[in-house]
Length: 427
Image (cartoon, helix red, strand yellow):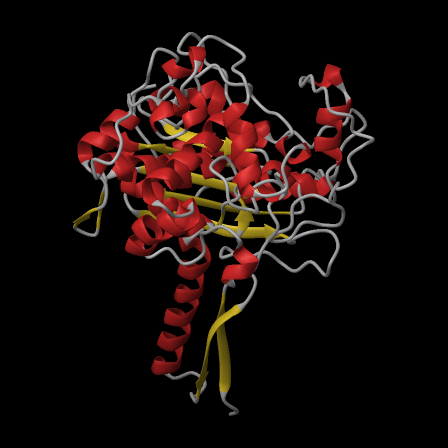
């Protein structure tokens, strides 16, 4: 009989092909067929072992909440679910997403770049969390700003405005630093928590002041390379990272943030006088205009791109008290300090409440973060569980009310499915 061709395939592409000469009816033939088809079954289910996740994500695509996504769940250091869904965008020849696709991580930059950088500098004795900011940024030496500390920036209690259109006032990093550093406080330092992009821009400036180099170069050398990360970094097009998932088409949302005072941000800037609104589909270009237009794509609050596996590696690093493959990357005491909830229920840099992480139930010790582009992560140290959800919700465009699709229910549904792997963990 002719050779029997058997292909072991994943859900989207062939993994390996065998060509076997066999004889119909032989015992060897039947055993080979059984083993190979068993292998197919194992491969197909090994990275999709959590019931319901596929249907949850596919429903999000069908409901036009995003064009594509990657979801990763790991338990006890092993991947329990890893899959790519949908397409990378809506124009510019989008392609099918696989699990190695890279996403604009938006505010996940705050934790996977800036917070980690501060942890490393603290371990090296180069900074202290209660150091006043003016030691590193002279504009903070006068008035009430003199009381602001690095810890306050990390915990969003520095009294800073939540957001301002820096790109109106600066076109390059030095101008952006000068403008942000000189901007007045909005609240009393240390009194209340007000989530602020400006605080993490300032932390990025502190990293650069201490190290003498941009934060992207520092964090790549000190963290990403030691961890063996392959697809995480700033300026992905310059670094040759890819393939990359697209985000939005133009800056419609940020335009409304400036033009509509009822939208939540009262700005004095005239949206009609600004002539540098970006157009076209953003692929490999940071979506956040303060990072992209004012900071050259490298900032402490946004600008990082990455893939699910790399993010999982960094979450595992924290869940194993800063140790990676037997090597201490971050001191255990530092990890503990950053992941201890403060009076507002959050860690240093990290969100630690169910409401902020978009969870229906919040296991004890949970930490994570969300990002505006449609990305979110959380980890449960007690059961060594990490969940990475990457979508490009901005690809759907703005709805009739001027908002991007709300994916919080999808986040909660995936979290519920993943948390089924954590039995007996305190809530």
